[in-house]
Length: 168
Image (cartoon, rainbow, N blue to C red; front, side):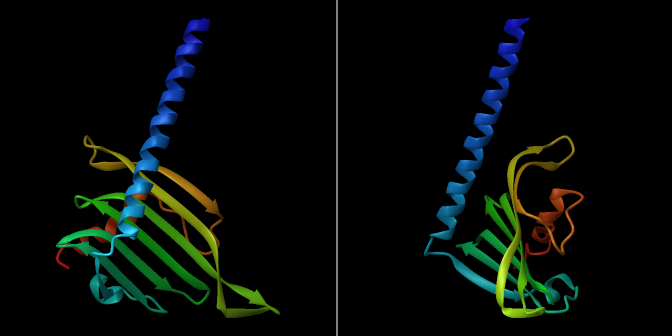
Protein backbone atom coordinates (compact mmCIF):
# COMPACT_ATOMS: atom_id res chain seq x y z
CA UNK A 1 0.00 0.00 0.00
CA UNK A 2 2.85 2.40 0.86
CA UNK A 3 4.51 1.75 -2.48
CA UNK A 4 1.31 2.52 -4.39
CA UNK A 5 0.99 5.82 -2.56
CA UNK A 6 4.63 6.67 -3.27
CA UNK A 7 4.19 5.86 -6.96
CA UNK A 8 1.05 8.02 -7.15
CA UNK A 9 2.77 10.95 -5.42
CA UNK A 10 5.85 10.62 -7.61
CA UNK A 11 3.72 10.54 -10.77
CA UNK A 12 1.77 13.61 -9.64
CA UNK A 13 5.01 15.48 -8.85
CA UNK A 14 6.45 14.66 -12.29
CA UNK A 15 3.27 15.86 -14.03
CA UNK A 16 3.27 19.16 -12.12
CA UNK A 17 6.98 19.67 -12.80
CA UNK A 18 6.59 19.03 -16.53
CA UNK A 19 3.60 21.43 -16.75
CA UNK A 20 5.58 24.17 -14.98
CA UNK A 21 8.51 23.57 -17.30
CA UNK A 22 6.23 23.85 -20.34
CA UNK A 23 4.60 27.11 -19.17
CA UNK A 24 8.04 28.57 -18.41
CA UNK A 25 9.19 27.66 -21.94
CA UNK A 26 6.09 29.33 -23.39
CA UNK A 27 6.73 32.48 -21.31
CA UNK A 28 10.32 32.54 -22.56
CA UNK A 29 9.07 32.30 -26.15
CA UNK A 30 6.62 35.18 -25.50
CA UNK A 31 9.43 37.35 -24.10
CA UNK A 32 11.42 36.70 -27.28
CA UNK A 33 8.48 37.89 -29.37
CA UNK A 34 8.02 41.00 -27.23
CA UNK A 35 11.70 41.93 -27.54
CA UNK A 36 12.06 41.20 -31.27
CA UNK A 37 12.90 44.46 -33.10
CA UNK A 38 12.21 42.88 -36.51
CA UNK A 39 8.47 42.57 -35.94
CA UNK A 40 6.22 44.48 -38.31
CA UNK A 41 2.91 45.59 -36.85
CA UNK A 42 -0.27 46.28 -38.80
CA UNK A 43 -3.39 47.85 -37.31
CA UNK A 44 -6.96 47.26 -38.48
CA UNK A 45 -10.48 48.29 -37.55
CA UNK A 46 -11.80 45.25 -35.68
CA UNK A 47 -15.40 46.14 -36.59
CA UNK A 48 -14.63 45.89 -40.32
CA UNK A 49 -12.66 42.65 -40.05
CA UNK A 50 -15.32 40.84 -38.01
CA UNK A 51 -18.34 42.69 -39.42
CA UNK A 52 -19.38 43.36 -35.81
CA UNK A 53 -19.91 46.56 -33.88
CA UNK A 54 -18.42 47.64 -30.57
CA UNK A 55 -19.73 50.82 -28.93
CA UNK A 56 -16.43 52.48 -28.04
CA UNK A 57 -14.28 51.21 -30.88
CA UNK A 58 -12.04 48.22 -31.31
CA UNK A 59 -8.68 47.66 -32.91
CA UNK A 60 -6.89 44.61 -34.16
CA UNK A 61 -3.10 44.60 -34.29
CA UNK A 62 -1.07 41.87 -35.94
CA UNK A 63 2.69 41.41 -35.51
CA UNK A 64 4.56 39.43 -38.14
CA UNK A 65 8.07 38.22 -38.82
CA UNK A 66 8.24 38.13 -42.61
CA UNK A 67 4.81 36.72 -43.49
CA UNK A 68 4.34 34.69 -40.30
CA UNK A 69 1.92 35.99 -37.66
CA UNK A 70 3.47 35.74 -34.19
CA UNK A 71 1.20 38.01 -32.12
CA UNK A 72 -2.39 39.21 -32.33
CA UNK A 73 -3.99 41.85 -30.13
CA UNK A 74 -7.69 42.65 -29.97
CA UNK A 75 -8.52 45.74 -27.92
CA UNK A 76 -12.03 46.94 -27.16
CA UNK A 77 -13.01 50.26 -25.63
CA UNK A 78 -15.95 50.18 -23.25
CA UNK A 79 -17.79 52.76 -21.20
CA UNK A 80 -16.25 51.25 -18.06
CA UNK A 81 -12.70 50.64 -19.31
CA UNK A 82 -10.81 48.51 -21.78
CA UNK A 83 -10.72 44.84 -22.66
CA UNK A 84 -7.68 43.27 -24.34
CA UNK A 85 -6.99 39.82 -25.76
CA UNK A 86 -3.49 38.80 -26.82
CA UNK A 87 -2.56 35.66 -28.72
CA UNK A 88 1.01 34.48 -29.26
CA UNK A 89 1.62 32.02 -32.08
CA UNK A 90 4.37 29.67 -33.15
CA UNK A 91 4.24 28.08 -36.60
CA UNK A 92 0.72 29.51 -37.04
CA UNK A 93 -0.53 27.70 -33.92
CA UNK A 94 -1.50 29.46 -30.69
CA UNK A 95 0.92 28.97 -27.80
CA UNK A 96 -0.47 31.45 -25.27
CA UNK A 97 -3.48 33.69 -24.85
CA UNK A 98 -3.88 36.56 -22.40
CA UNK A 99 -7.14 38.24 -21.48
CA UNK A 100 -7.03 41.53 -19.57
CA UNK A 101 -9.94 43.52 -18.19
CA UNK A 102 -9.11 47.07 -17.13
CA UNK A 103 -11.63 49.38 -15.48
CA UNK A 104 -11.66 53.11 -14.92
CA UNK A 105 -11.22 54.12 -11.30
CA UNK A 106 -13.96 55.89 -9.38
CA UNK A 107 -13.03 59.22 -7.87
CA UNK A 108 -15.59 61.14 -5.76
CA UNK A 109 -18.33 58.83 -7.08
CA UNK A 110 -17.44 59.72 -10.68
CA UNK A 111 -15.58 57.75 -13.30
CA UNK A 112 -11.99 58.91 -13.68
CA UNK A 113 -11.36 58.32 -17.39
CA UNK A 114 -7.66 59.06 -16.99
CA UNK A 115 -6.97 56.15 -14.63
CA UNK A 116 -7.26 52.52 -15.74
CA UNK A 117 -6.75 49.70 -13.25
CA UNK A 118 -6.24 46.05 -14.16
CA UNK A 119 -9.22 44.23 -12.67
CA UNK A 120 -8.68 40.77 -14.09
CA UNK A 121 -5.98 38.92 -16.02
CA UNK A 122 -6.07 35.37 -17.30
CA UNK A 123 -3.13 33.65 -18.98
CA UNK A 124 -4.00 30.63 -21.08
CA UNK A 125 -1.16 28.28 -21.99
CA UNK A 126 -1.71 25.85 -24.85
CA UNK A 127 -0.22 22.64 -23.48
CA UNK A 128 -1.31 20.30 -26.23
CA UNK A 129 -3.84 19.38 -28.88
CA UNK A 130 -6.39 16.62 -28.50
CA UNK A 131 -6.38 15.41 -32.08
CA UNK A 132 -9.30 13.06 -31.49
CA UNK A 133 -11.69 15.98 -30.95
CA UNK A 134 -9.58 18.71 -32.57
CA UNK A 135 -9.37 20.99 -29.53
CA UNK A 136 -6.47 22.50 -27.65
CA UNK A 137 -5.57 21.51 -24.11
CA UNK A 138 -4.87 24.33 -21.66
CA UNK A 139 -3.43 25.40 -18.37
CA UNK A 140 -4.72 28.70 -17.00
CA UNK A 141 -3.55 31.23 -14.43
CA UNK A 142 -5.95 33.89 -13.18
CA UNK A 143 -5.34 37.09 -11.22
CA UNK A 144 -8.13 39.25 -9.82
CA UNK A 145 -11.83 38.92 -10.50
CA UNK A 146 -13.94 39.66 -13.54
CA UNK A 147 -16.06 42.73 -13.10
CA UNK A 148 -17.71 43.19 -16.48
CA UNK A 149 -16.70 40.36 -18.82
CA UNK A 150 -18.06 36.83 -18.94
CA UNK A 151 -15.90 33.72 -18.67
CA UNK A 152 -15.52 31.53 -21.72
CA UNK A 153 -17.66 28.43 -21.99
CA UNK A 154 -14.83 26.97 -24.05
CA UNK A 155 -11.29 28.39 -23.98
CA UNK A 156 -10.91 27.54 -27.67
CA UNK A 157 -13.21 30.56 -28.29
CA UNK A 158 -10.35 32.85 -27.25
CA UNK A 159 -8.60 31.90 -30.49
CA UNK A 160 -11.65 32.35 -32.78
CA UNK A 161 -10.22 35.56 -34.31
CA UNK A 162 -7.44 33.50 -35.91
CA UNK A 163 -9.98 32.13 -38.41
CA UNK A 164 -10.88 35.70 -39.46
CA UNK A 165 -7.35 37.00 -40.09
CA UNK A 166 -5.73 34.38 -42.30
CA UNK A 167 -5.74 36.74 -45.29
CA UNK A 168 -4.30 39.81 -43.51
